[in-house]
Image 1 (cartoon, rainbow over the protein chains, first blue to last red):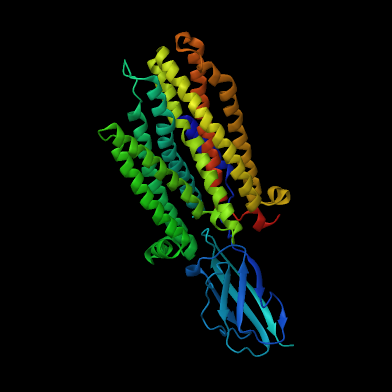
Image 2 (tube, rainbow over the protein chains, first blue to last red; image 1 turned 90 degrees about the horizontal axis):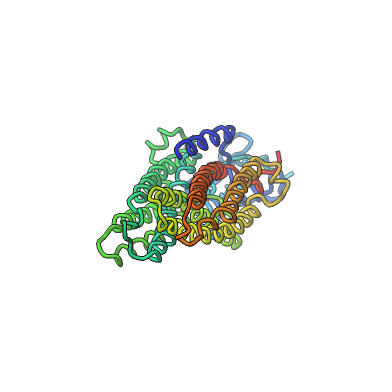
Amino acid sequence: MVKYVLGTMVGVALALVGVEARAHAFLDHASPAVGSTVATAPATVTIWYTEDLEPAFSRMTVTNAAGQQVDLGNAHVPPGHPDELQVGLKRLPPGTYHVSWHVVSVDTHPTQGTFTFRVGG
Amino acid sequence: MDWLLVAARWVHFAATISLFGFFAFDRLVLRPTFAAAGAAPGGSRPPAHRLLWFAWTGLALTLISGGVWLLAVATMMSGQPFAVAVAHGASEMVLLRTRFGEDWLVRLGLAAGVAICLALRGARGAARAAAAGWAGLVLAGALLGALAWAGHGAATPGQVGRFHLAADILHLLAAGLWLGMLLPLASLLAEARRRGGARWAAIAGAATHRFSALAIGSVVVLLAGGIVNSSFLVGSLRALLGTEYGHLLLAKIGVFLGMAVIAAVNLLRLTPRLGRPAEEADERIWRAAAWLYRNALVEVALGLAVLAIVGALGILPPGTHGGPH
């Protein structure tokens, strides 16, 4: 029996070489949309993900072209919407804004990403 | 750290399944078989002592691998090196503020209950021991089924996610029933061959028939749960063939088919040979028992391969998310 078990363990370990951990909660869509230009300044940035999130390990920041933080620092998963991450924004003048997010899905896997949006013409 | 996580998941699934299999075999196969065989001249009592160490080992491995799994997940979630994550209390944060942590704590309580049932299993009084055995079966089943909350099965959003979760729980329990009872069955067949004689031939035959009936039901549920899981996690032939998740799932299905072929040989060729009347016990019956014993061990080895793939699948993005390379 021992040789069967050991043989299996070695065989499977070799077969699985190359498997890497990857994230599971991917950005599904966002508001403002990724890469979009909006006419009026949004009050929040909301991102919808492909899986539910762990609020304790999920965060998002928004910065302007100068790298200054323009969100209110209140990134949170809204109650009843476990697959959303939302952050409030200061009053945004026209310009380009950079959103950076890092989340962990409920099946424990972290992922992160960035996108930009523009306000005004 | 990825490898530590895969290894921890592998050992944890195998150990939890072995625990469930121990109680299932004891209650659903061993006890009814010996009860039907009647009082036991010549000491044909169930070889419980041989299986009990197996259950305690399974419990110990469940706890150790569960601890390693928690540390690996805390490290991954925090995004910090292992030592930093542990020192900064990432494990406590995971335990107290995540679904994985809630599930982990609930399952720790279930494991404690299983330990009590194992300890009480040898209690004086048949009724008390039987109650401990049945309680152990339920708790070990819950310990196994609750693994669904620690993986992809609980991550599907919305109402349809509950259906996925239920399918995953059934998939786990069916896999546990089949895989988990293989080693106890091999142990019983080995014991029967060692003891020899018409009585033990009849016991081996009756136990194998009971096991086969449960295994057939398990495989049906296993397939149904697997199809539902795959539809949620892979979703298309393109994703099955074009993603790393899909490739591993195909490998898992391939090994499963190998197990199913062996099981079919056991069911159609070997088990009927054990079903002869006891007075006809002869060399052919013991040859069949020897083949069943070997096949059970080969199935265990293949089952461990399947569980290793399960360990890796849990850390990969499902095919529905990854998209073809």
